Image 1 (cartoon, rainbow, N blue to C red):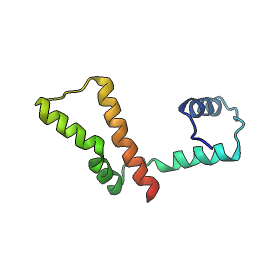
Image 2: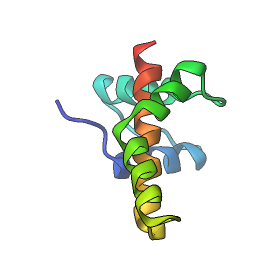
Image 3: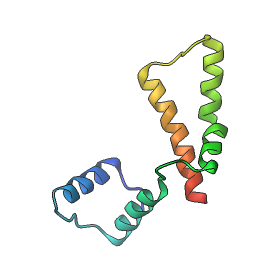
Image 4: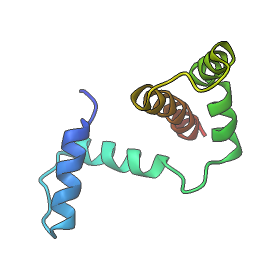
Length: 95
């Protein structure tokens, strides 16, 4: 078994928005439900702490100090934020 791809999830959501029902296996349904249930509207305290404690946050802080300002392009910034977000979601999955 693998993970649900972003492309699959986007196609499944597009079908739902159009009022169609994508044909999903039991495993795919479980994976989509698990992904949707893991994300909170407001981050919990545990999620915020996990974001601050992840390696991406440490690297961001170090890079800002080294450059004495914001050192990243938009793409690099978004990758950093995504890594912090993944750490926060992983924390939600544990709790």
